[in-house]
Amino acid sequence: MTMTAAALTPSMPDTPEVAELPPLPEHLWGMLFHDVQSRGLFSDSKTFVDMIPTKSVEDIMADYAQLCARYSNCDNAPCVSNETLREFVEARFERIETQANVEPPQRQSNIRDHIDALWNVLTRQPRPRYNPNSSRLPLPHAYVVPGGRFNEIYYWDSYFTMLGLRESGRIDLMRDMVNNAAFLINAYGHVPNGNRTYYLSRSQPPFFCGMVGQLAQHDGEWVYEHYLPQMEREYTYWMDGTEALHHCEAYRRSVKLSEGTLLNRHWDDLNTPREESFREDMETACHSTRNHIEVWRNIRAGAESGWDFSSRWLSDPHDLATIRTVDILPLDLNCLLYHMESLLAATHRRLGHYQRADFFQSAANSRLDALRRLFWSQEEKRFGDYLWHENELTDSVSAAIVFPLYFGVATDEQAAHVADTLEHQLLQPGGLMTSTIDTEQQWDAPNGWAPLQWMAIKGLKRYGHDRLADTIAKRWMHNNFYRFEKDHKLLEKYNVMDINAAPDGGEYPAQDGFGWTNGVLRALLALYPEATFENTAP
Image 1 (cartoon, helix red, strand yellow):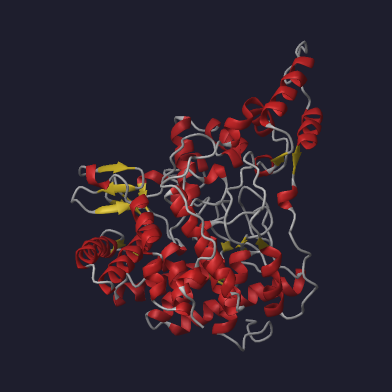
Image 2 (cartoon, one colour; image 1 turned 120 degrees about the vertical axis):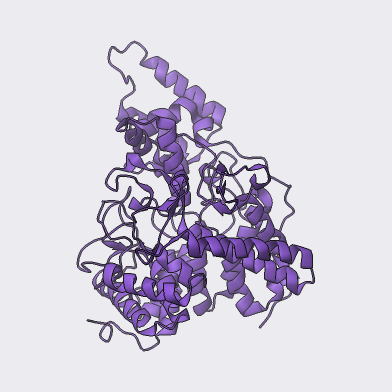
């Protein structure tokens, strides 16, 4: 059944050209923020910045000034003990955002039924009363969160979550997810990392065009026309500043190479410790001889990549303080921009906007040439990330090489070499591992992630490598089935080298829930309807 435009965007509120940016937690809470976060008052640094104040900012800060004054004659700092500080915070802030808005589903023996039931558990409704001092950015429609500590939308997670929503028949939530992303683009010029104030300075891998594409598969191609303004506006965000760039210059997310080719990198408009990982970022910088601002800028840019963190971004793969994200043109990001340009060109051409179509097609052609030429090592027969200052690829071999297959960037010959690399360097008993080395970062070995499995499977099938695609699917599904049989959970990430072991590394414990794992597995169950725990076993 198709929908009209009016039905597609129910109660979409008018938004200003660019909404006034709300204050960040660090600015709202000043010294209280620094004391709570720098001391590690909570085991997860994200806890405090997600709490909701129950009193005004003025009242809370006045209370804190009085509390500090009470201990002002102490000889030893900090005067206010951690226990007292925690009691102060707990009395004036609520953690209600960590609670599910519905009861968890009853135990389901069938994994399809389990996933279908979880959508309601992971769905959040717009709040009728918005607290302006909460870090949560309000959204007009229902949305699906990943789960665990992640109680807000995440941009690129949403695309893969939508894969499962469609198979579960939840087209209503698919439309809501696309409309929320369009709302954020209207309001802020981009889709933030997540709908939190502290995520507004960066985005994530730009899958909005892909989200629109999923909806168009159900509702029809007119959906592209409906969301064309938002697709163009997001493109403008990623290409901001290109008009003024000289050769070998960069501005925000745009880079102009010596030959004049325009490509993209990850960036964050702030260069301070991330508020949701404040203590961790302070410690990383303190362990480095580099300028701290340079470290924080690159950490933030790495967070925009969605691969936070990975040896992909490090000059020393075992030292996070050597992170150099802004010096790298990522393979996956530029494949996404190629897809965006191609889709914009096709949409404008269908509408008869031939000048705009030619503009985007020219940009897509230029980027495609660069991807096949600069991001490919003919000597090593591999794709990689491009160091734009050095004019060479990084040494990292990662599962990002599936992007050129998923988006049709690779030549047939290149795709064959990608398949060989996947099979002989990244394929493990439980699926594809994320990189070839174990660094204790979560986007490296031994971990595997649902979105990369999906893109590998679909990308390989696109180029006729069905046997390898089916092998990856079988091993990944068995890994998921095994954990479900054992713990009745679906996880954020999996150990693919040893399915009996837990995933490794990262800034926080492995989370369960979990939005994009559910979405990908539900889609794979539709692609492989006969798959079971028994018949996927090695």
